[in-house]
Image (cartoon, one colour):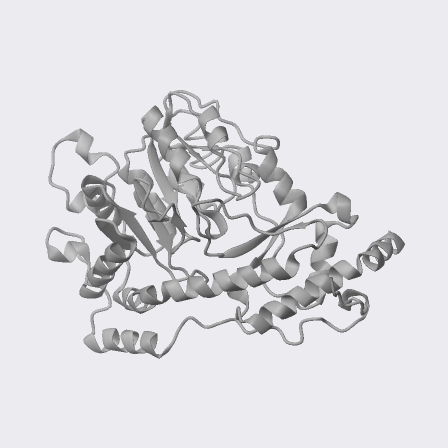
Length: 435
């Protein structure tokens, strides 16, 4: 392996990355023109929280939803003002009640779990698969109790969870399956679009995702009744629903989760570009895989058979015992070499104070205390060993949206890695002297 041997930038040398690669703009002339058309039309939101056609939003929103339904191959797509709102809609639509348990992953943005708390449900955290960072199906099945009502899978970093096994487990136990594909639009699992194998799935449109309009999200489902309930929760259901059936009124509380016409117009322009954007990231990932192959103590991403990966994050693992250098020190060295978009770890939700202390609504411990009796679900260290070890010691990654993804950019990043690995003895010695 031909490795550079010059002095590390951390120790006074010249950085391997000649110039920090520019963050690629996802906004172009077509986006600007779409926004201009909306502004000239004068209608920034077509929603009204009352019965009638305007209940489903304006022209741009409805056109974008039809576009998404066709693109992802589903019966229904519904736009929302954020993916957090989408998760709240999804959990509410499946009828979660106070005290119901919902199993999910600790390796995700907090909204995946707090959407459960929104409806006074109890999040239960299963461990993750070390290879993919997604939910481990065996861990999920071990945690199912009579109170379990649903599972929320998360396609973290851009690769689908094992939806085939999770679907089988949920079907066997009579559970709903939700899919948080915030980071994985365009990914596939055995040929099906990620997000479409669950009862409800969906994608984020916020500013650093594959498609972005500032803030937004898209829900997808093939279930007509769930689609109706999603639309109701999105837009002031209590003012619209006309039924006296208590079962039909569950969770139909007033919300304003409505996407604006400007955001819908931008997203409509970008959706047809998704495949090309994914292909660029996949090409960059393939070049990184080839360039980093053979570096001792470094593992590149694993893509499971039947999956495609869209690389929101290019995930790596370190064998720090073999390397003799901590993850933190290696990240310092790579940062000094100019490597952009480094992600040093990923949070474990079950270790956050809100969950460890079981304090959400008021001071009394609701919903854990007082919801169908006192919940036995607890949180803290040791609950998810794989997730905790990866978080504290061995995982890091590259946020793929933070550099331009061209071959020259990738080559510079590879050069920086090889330089650091070639100078591991010097890095060890510097750490020893500092100690």
